[in-house]
Length: 535
Image (tube, rainbow, N blue to C red; front, side, top):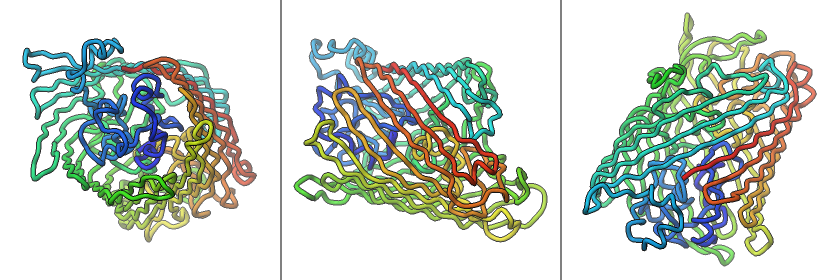
């Protein structure tokens, strides 16, 4: 899952890069808002141990470990507890000293080395400038935001089967003409970002484990949810997940409640039992094959995601400008996905049917939900040319409903827990609801620099439904005519200028249609600069 990309997209990036490049000069940011993924390694060509800190997931090390359901891993994981640094104990002292921070990655606490500690950290400084945030509805212009985040963790391994991971977070925010700082997503004095215990071993021939506590969750379509990494505070969950990984099949079961980040006091975060995520995800690796003279590996995934949520995310728009119907909703999302590599092609195709119910807050009959989504991306890579260019197309459709109806089925696709911000739009102005997006993708990498361009064109899937941003329903209604929303050309350049350091620049212009501008929406420019240090 990625931009950091989905496993399919992640697996497509520079499979032939050498181990030396990976461990020393590779772009390493775990920032899920990035349009560009870190350069990836094909697990079919390089083993887990050679590529760094991947666990032994076999074929599910594809996408740099993301195919295992724990997100991209080497050299540093999006979920830091997914890393495995035990291979360092078998390296010579001279090799370990090539990177001073290796001394913090495997600290033996007993003479026999069965109990050991691994430390990890990230400090991220981000500057964001927006001329018209949220299509002009944020009521500020030329907003400059400065965000500083520090996340530091400790991973204690107690023998071969038990580990405990704790990650602390501190976050600061400033700037001029700012907005959104009161939500708890930007400022944290000091809090528990993650705290979990994992028990794992071999059961019925599978690598099996149970992870309980507060944790990131990445085993979901990126078009539906992500770790919410544009702001300082990532989205974490409280609950339990169990996984089993066989040679060619894996299964993940989970039941979570969302972390409540609004209390800003020291260790003030609690649990939002009104925000629930539960379900199952399975993936099967098909036999390897050859296509156009290159290796191919495809996966077939089947999943169920259940959501329970209320508040602004669940409210349905009414026909009157700015009015909504409050309530709560359950969404049952059944989906399938085919993804992977076919020689120089990287494919990602998925379809989702979403059922469930909507319950009005005050009165009225419960309404059924019938919504859908379909997503596709196809890219072609030419490794023999300068920059190993990648070019292709991405197309998405998320169903819409009808704000003039107060009964009958609800047709708007629900994505309450933040799709990956750059999946379609880095600015969070648009999201995976009542949306059609189509546009080309071009990427290139040379040395430690990676570049990407994406130019999506957007339409409303239903002209009888509202326009949606992340956790926001815009007030534009009957004075909004036509389905075309606009075009959002996006570019990113990321430079890993030294080991552990990455400097990234994101630029997006949102040019809205005449119908959107006549309804009151405003076109704008978005620029984001991010400096990340991690070990």
